[in-house]
Image: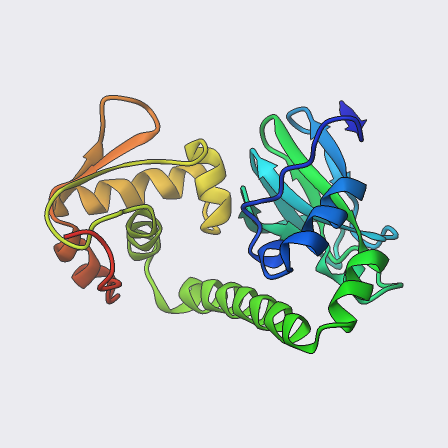
Length: 237
């Protein structure tokens, strides 16, 4: 089920893209935007459909998929609050590059692509910032593809858990942002493969927490070393 509303005040304050705009311009765009509420399983946009709007996730999560030549679908990412979908709307005339489907109740802000493009063309610095954001996201997706080939399933799972940690050392409890089946999709695994990856991390002190969606890590630094990653220095010690 999909419900569109223009009556509620639009949010979007957690969007890095819109936050690049001056306050007055951002408020004008938000005033003209519409909110789309999606029930679990509802498709927001289909791959190759016209995409005149940029979508900003306010709450919940969307599964982004690509159709293969054989007619199947592959999950390319799971996006949440602050993330954008159909950035091609800013270019004008480009179809949706992916299919976006809600994996839970989700609220999305739809911003007119032509209006946003007009704002960005008037400000070269904003346009360059937006292109930088899009480039960083592309690098992130390419990094995920590289990890699929160069990292083991246990290492990929460990890296995902580390991305949820607020600390760079000691013990940590993390909360999965969605169910384990969706985690498996995001990491390019089958659910049973994810279960085996969790089992391989158990000797490193990674185990389930008191709730289904919580995971305990005995030593964050040890897990990072196992995964071959360097944690950010600005995480809490």
